[in-house]
Image (cartoon, one colour):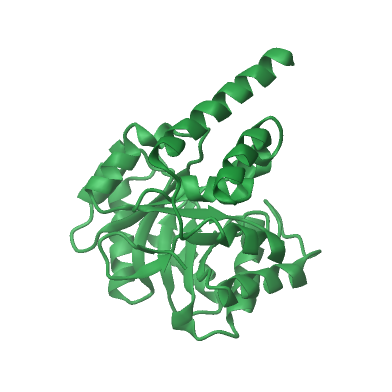
Length: 286
């Protein structure tokens, strides 16, 4: 299992985490696949994917309930639970109430990584970050993270912390979504902030033609599948963790094969160029 240091801490977590968006519902609870969700989360943990990322808004909290059910059979310290607070709940008092509800749904005494899901320009970050620090002081969360934050928003959030660091920023990143490379990625690297990259497979769109043909070419060279090539491309940076959602044990096993090896440097450069060209050609035809 390839590991990454979380921020500037001494905590090591897998370079691949399990995302849970749409597990247990989207905006509302969906109970139709509860047994499958619990089983895949448990399977991931047994396979060493001990970073489980969820959010209070996933399935209106039902996803947290399912993650809580899944992790009950493991010693608490063996699972790294990350969840996110919705941007409407970022006032000082609301942060504590949201955290309390998440703890209840997850059935745990503390959350490893508590993240602001999106910034809210109408609620002062100073208020939110002071609440987050107090939660660390009280032992209810271990680390403070953010999600979908720009460099400017990161700087502001960091300036409002006096005792603790922001350890992570969860953002969109894959070979066709590379906006973070301009500012966010180098800023986080300089400041010891881990990037947690969601949609490394582009929600599955990168595994379809015309992109699949390109990835299969790289796969033949390295003896890997298209999904493994994509995971490997994302985690080539030392401060990046890939976060992928799957309901299939076989697919999870496949994704694990994206770790523990490296492509030649020039191939990391060529891959997004070729994928972009293939996408452009597809658009012209349509």
